[in-house]
Amino acid sequence: MQTRPLYPPFTVGVDLGGTNTVYAIVDKTGYIIDKESFPTKTPSVDIWADILADGIRRMIDRHSLQGDVVGIGIGAPSANATTGSIEGATNLPWPPPVPLANLLEVRLGLPVKVNNDANAAAIGEKAYGVAAGMNDFIVLTLGTGVGGGVVCNGHLLSGARGFAGELGHVTFPFAADRVCGCGRKGCLETVASARGIVETARRMMEESDKDSILRNIPADQLTSKAISEAAIAGDVMAKEVYDFTGDCLGKAAAEFAAFTDPEAIILFGGVAKAGDLLVNPMREAFGKATLHLYRDRLRFLVSALDGANAALVGAASLPLI
Image (tube, rainbow, N blue to C red):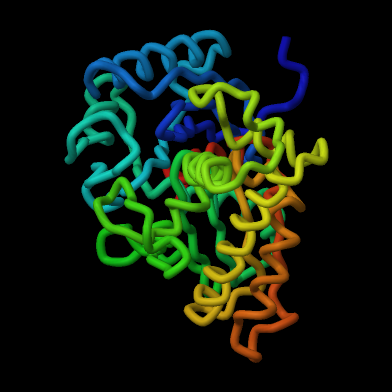
């Protein structure tokens, strides 16, 4: 039974990730009334839209909010905010373009706004998270892929089609021998995503005979979470994996700082749960690589919002802005 006061207007936020789709009903304070998820990978995008629309209807009915939900916001990779479509996402199972807004509008009869998933996370972080009160910051979303949400002078940088801030696809020498899902080599995503971290561990195990509990994990069960847990438990090789990843992120941050002179870079997503395993080597590498103007002036923070909630509440706020 719901006991907390709820404050209209109510919206639905959808976080469309490469692995899971999470959706929630949110009130105007950012309070998540209800939340559910399902695997993103479906035989077709129409089946995905059917599953999502059915889930949203059930959620609205469960809380007797028929007629009270004013719109739906979707945070998705490579989303075009102008057309409401996904164009060329490398971590989704359907061929582009994917007309997200239209797919849900025809099924639910509610207005739908779409934006880049990292942009949605940045909006949520500014409204309800560690970026509250900040006007200049960058959110790096570290999950199946790597995305960026850039807020400058209090405004979200979207670009002509909503594709500004694709920081995961900025290329660096430290990843020059890695092929990205976008087809290029050297993207930050190839080292800083969950898959990139697993690839780093795989390479380290091949190139060294050092003992590690990672060797006891079947290849198809090796995850970034398992690697971070091993590092926390004291496994030297697992710690080296995160040292390398944090070092790469710090070098990347040194370049990003020159774009907008941010107050902070905020890590968000499943990979960011590693916390200091990433932040400490990231801060050290940044200090060595950055221009003197930014040294010792930039904060490195981990999202204080639980799980995917930054993206959810950010997406849910899209119909209101």
